[in-house]
Image (cartoon, rainbow, N blue to C red; front, side):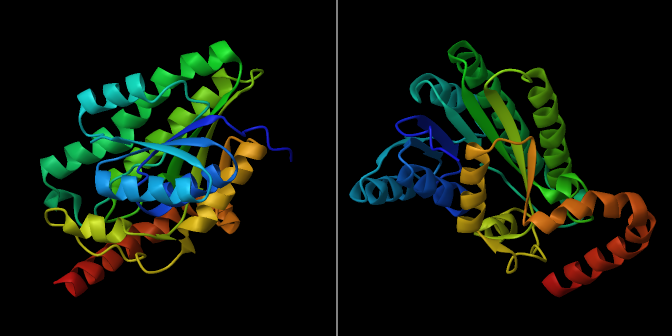
Length: 265
């Protein structure tokens, strides 16, 4: 698998921690110029300094992706993207009826609107140049509706559908669109979800693969594009589980949520 990405420009959202940070480090180490997008400017600057110290090229674009004005600024200032990694995402755990509209709105803005706006803004340039790759960091929850993450799972289902449709539209071109259906990953995601109004502990927050492992799989995906990859790979059986055993989940799932909420107090 030849590395044809050296000196290409990669824009990575949610780059201040977790999968985004690990992906930025990985792509910079492989010779790409990275643009780091997230709200926390101090973390972005520290990451950019680390990348530069290791011989890479990085610049930061602090932005709040819940705000359309910030998303437009990213599209205008980032440059001609060869790679776009839509990694930024918000989560929340609990009964959907307990979720505030503010939390729901923010999740929709980051998980859905930001992905669509950035993708549709950078995609025309990729098509004109005849090359490029958009990678959407999704979740296995998009394939298996789960109690406690009703809206989050729905946003990831949207991501699956959006990615698949664009992938098919681009068949025969050298522009690729992929979705990473990730399982639990050990990041700050659970802490961020808990910090939201009425949020609870995500049951899988302390298990799963590392962010570095996901970043490695993203790099391999760039070398050998596919419509979808599962991380870890065995999760490809999960969509079949919903089809075969959804009726069991209908019964057991609510009990699991009730128990978890009881633990949360």
